[in-house]
Image 1 (tube, helix red, strand yellow):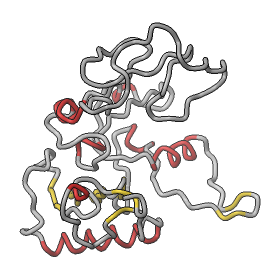
Image 2: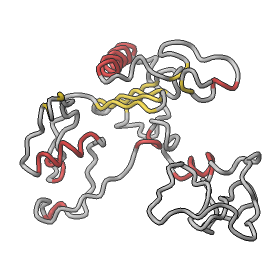
Image 3: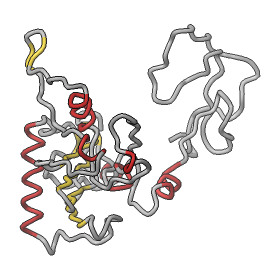
Image 4: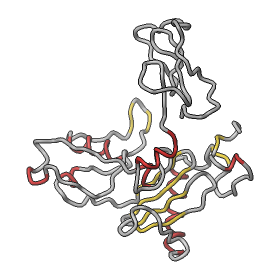
Length: 250
């Protein structure tokens, strides 16, 4: 992001602010700010050294991959390089001293944080609020893991992000890249880098986990989805196949 050679953003710093200054409390809603707070246009692209207030850079696909070595891919994808993030937990009153500085290998998900907060607060998650039914908690409390105990997770962890999708069930992971990407299957206990696709060798497990994902996706309103092509359809030929786009915005 911001490194394309054809990026239309200016390369040279303006001699003086050319845009109206922003109000003190205004927050720019754009992912890439269009200007500095005092009115200088944002500079991007090759030849622009990052650091100044009027520069914006993403460091590109190649460095994104390097940053996640040895895992595959990076943010946006749901291979390990895109979803594996360390969680640092600090709770002096609740984490045993014997667990200080310990590494806990059990996988967790963002959905577990709400369940953990509800558990630690001794609260009860409501079924409805102001007459509106609330979706029940999806995650599990991480309290047992803080003491080195099993989480007792009874359901797989599911993912979907812009057509990229995955299921984590114990040591097994089902994952696909892009709306039309083929499902891949990995045994993360021996292959955390996702280099040996076992989909052809484990057809029954593959079929079962695909069914689990599809059941979750329909329940969670992931399907039918907004991406092109529709789920289960082949990718179109040409550049459009590189990355899924929202339907109606091709």
